[in-house]
Image (cartoon, rainbow, N blue to C red; front, side, top):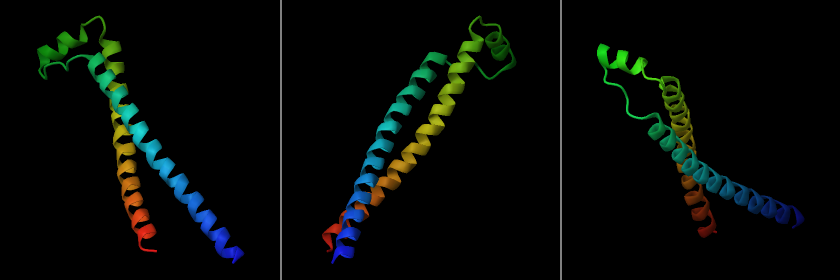
Length: 104
């Protein structure tokens, strides 16, 4: 009896932690997407992929800042994709957890 109560308590605690993790992944996906969008917009338009376009881009006074924004947008975009994937897995886990609760 006590073992069953301990197992049930541990299961409920674990389910709560997993639900909080899903919410945290979803929130962080949203925040990183906003950061990636901000840095992509701050970086400005990409140069024309030609020799003249790249030369003109290299001579801009803010080229280092634009490259920094594009690099940060890239890293935040990768983080967004990873956290988005974890959010989808968490939603799938939540679906199966609800099915387990309903089948008892």
